[in-house]
Image (cartoon, rainbow over all chains, first blue to last red; front, side):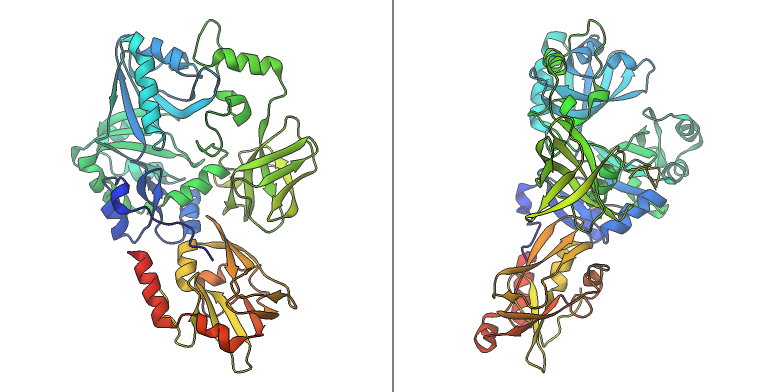
Length: 377
Length: 132
């Protein structure tokens, strides 16, 4: 067999502040977008189940936190993002959006937090950091918005049905009271254990409830250890990938990039065509919508044994497509995938696995929500 | 990490081979290999009666993360496959050198081809150097 995951030379990769913690836990480390990250600590499937059934945590400090300051920040975000920042009416609310180029291609997907009228925070992907910062910096200039990357901030995602309560138990009363009240897709800031400053966002990438916690690097190891002592299972990026796929969430670079629009990436729900808002890429999106006939992204389930993988050919009566994200689903015990196919692809759909055409079913996704299989999956 | 049994021979690509008293060769993937792959979820085995050639792919193992070809350590005819694996591929994670065997070959040219394989010490050295 071929060794599947060659490690990048150590001097080529960046390390998060938790790198030593991962290694001390015996994590298997891999190169992930230029970062030396844990793919699993033991069994990836057990880590997956820990998040579905109890609570798990992920080091996501490789993600890029960018703060935007200036009186015209909201106006700038109206222009920069395909989703409407005006949906953020209350301080502390968050929004998922694509950032498009003029052709409607997806530069990245991100979460934006409304912290003050002259202060928003965005969290973008790690692998897209350089181009994102360049793009945001360029677009920000006419609005006199100051773009400040925050590499000194670490981030730990705590996810699962028991994740919130395990975090609450670590918080002093004042922060705890506010954190218990924070709604989904919103954030509170406050003091954590030993007074460490925390940014506690009720967001995630697993389909489970929980928090993504931004913490200064100086306190990240202490927070990680507190969570571990509270029974939160360390989980690698392998489990994070199967969890987000089950939850029906796109992965940038695999499910979408600059070569496709949100319409072709099942992200139409994140595009706000609100009247009079001239966001970058809007014209191209409206044109493609009017023209119709563009490719679509669908969810697939394979009832036969085997694993759907990125790049496999998908044969449909309307023509060929391809598997985007594909994996084994630990919750369902079979393989699931996203595929991009010609518009209006109807059954029968088959996937070419090493030259054999295997039947698959197109399903509505998410495949899994709150620990259980969704209807029809 | 499981200790490497002394009666095994290895390919550099992490397959193991054990010459049985009957002269057949039982094959699998090494404990190191299952560790690299992670949780196994699918196994595609050859059919009994297939002819295989040393160094050619004749089975597939898939973990959650990746699919990997398994190469035949020696040439010959497949005389048995581990039918329990397709329903319990995790057996390879649990016991790569025992219950996790993949297939048995009746070899054509054992005396010559077995010389091409690594003994346990040489294999242990190989995986140690890979870890660096």
